Length: 179
Ligand SMILES: CC(C)(COP(=O)(O)OP(=O)(O)OC[C@H]1O[C@@H](n2cnc3c(N)ncnc32)[C@H](O)[C@@H]1OP(=O)(O)O)[C@@H](O)C(=O)NCCC(=O)NCCS
Image (cartoon, rainbow, N blue to C red; front, side, top):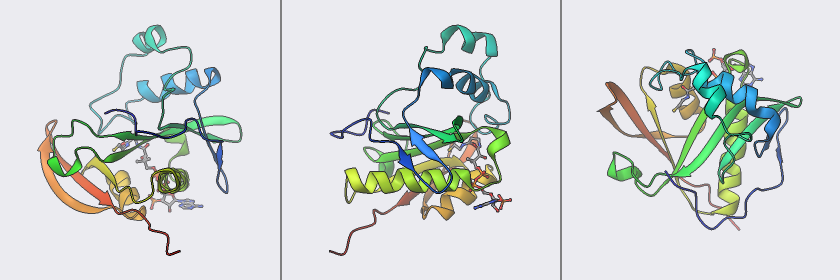
């Protein structure tokens, strides 16, 4: 994965009804460690990382790069939405496309926050790279993620086997402005 391309980064914080999407800050470090050490978050992502390793290796300001949004609820990080370019995807249909990823702390699941944040990130993508489609890969067993992908308008391109599980590649066409 690499950065998206010629875009101005960071954008001004993106406000939705309940959330703010913004650049990561030093105060998010504990939430990043919690998220990456969480077995629940990593059930379908190859397993969590040891907390002591994360404490040692996590940068002072984690996850700060173009396309990496912290999702903030009432001033605290609840998750991360990522838009990167899939330079080395296993499936040719995804290579070179903008790739959506999302990780939320378990206490923030079940409120529609992930859907609200991902919609806003995809709207931002439409605004900075008009006409750009997005892809998303998730395990088919990851029911919450599959539901979210459908809600966001991703449709199946193909299923494939990788990382010892069935994977789903979805694509979302860009919303083209009519004027
Ligand atoms: C995948 C993941 C982001 C989904 O989170 P989520 O909270 O279930 O997703 P949504 O934001 O779409 O919320 C959906 C739920 O909120 C409920 N909800 C409650 N209030 C709501 C509101 N105001 N608006 C919308 N939905 C609301 C919905 O009914 C829905 O519940 P359901 O799943 O029981 O039907 C989350 O499980 C996660 O972070 N998993 C770990 C990381 C991961 O696997 N990422 C995928 C990598 S490809």
